[in-house]
Image (cartoon, rainbow, N blue to C red; front, side):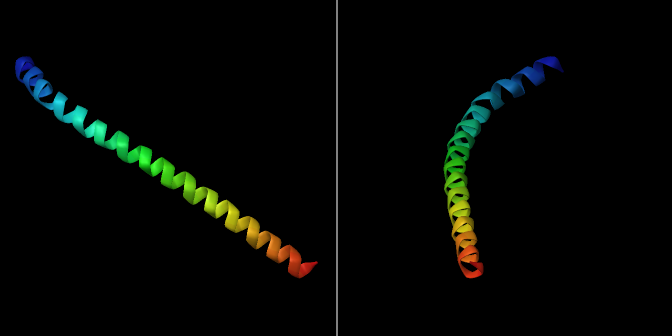
Amino acid sequence: MQNAAQEVLHLLTPCMAGILGILGQVTQQMHIAFAVACAEMIEGRFVVMHQRAGKHG
């Protein structure tokens, strides 16, 4: 049973390495997209805040 598990792990390791590599690239792109989205959201909020402040003032 242990031998079978080792064989399965041996077969899965390259697959996992490939999947992890792809995931690494995707997460990096997502982090960049997320950072950009956050920056845009923050800028948008500041614009809205300034507009509201301008209306009240």
